[in-house]
Image 1: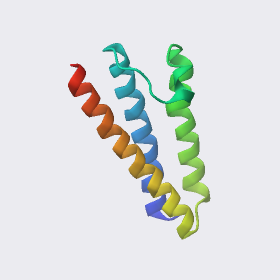
Image 2: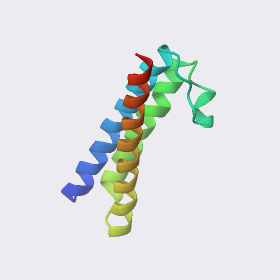
Image 3: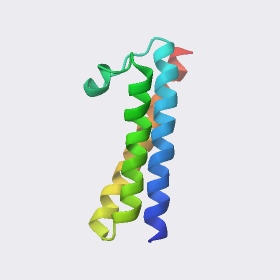
Image 4: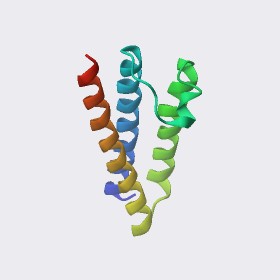
Length: 98
């Protein structure tokens, strides 16, 4: 397996966990989930966790095992960078709430 793919797949899982953590805290301080797909489940912590972390973990695992091409790696790395931006957004939101 390509080490870069595994590194980015692991980063996807870690960032997904961070997204769930920061979002959960922000919601406790009065933030609102802006993702319409997630709005329906933020009141159900188990489902929220499953979708935010477990699903991303499965995607990261599959990506780590299956991506063999440059276009696949570009898609994976783009998702990782998007999640990194999302984490920055969450931190900025928390900073304004706390």
